[in-house]
Image 1 (cartoon, rainbow, N blue to C red):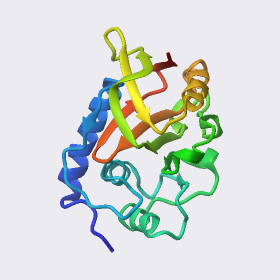
Image 2 (cartoon, rainbow, N blue to C red):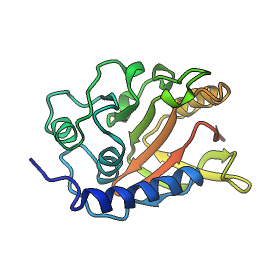
Image 3 (cartoon, helix red, strand yellow):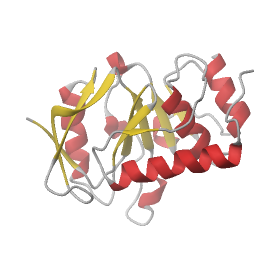
Image 4 (cartoon, one colour):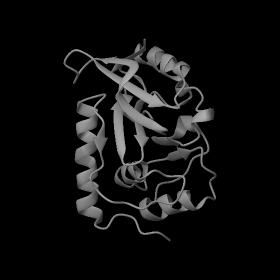
Length: 192
């Protein structure tokens, strides 16, 4: 079994601070700031985020085969229970962007408890801050732009419809290698 963090406490705190920066400043590409080796097909940033956020009380869904080494690694280091149903997950990981599907199939939370929604983590083929996706909303001065390589425009358009349901919604973290960018449910994303 590949080890997780070098230091569970210090590494998870460092990753959590980087993740908070990304959520507070949507569209800002952030490096995870630590070295981490993960089993394939996990990108280091995805592994770091999941090791930081998952625990025995956070149901987790992924498009990776349940018996895979990477899911066994995550369960071993976090104790997170695996669910086969997207809408029952608090966290979800998509690695197969060719078959990404509809983000509205994940749990948007309820009006009484919007915090029980799914946080969707999507591995991409690259992140760039000069793309055709325009971001506006809290934490953005005027507008930011984003390119999510391999992510179909239709996925972003469906996500834009979810934005209209605030406070319900699905928070998203897009990953490439050691970097991540956050799209909280409060961020408006438009494909130009």
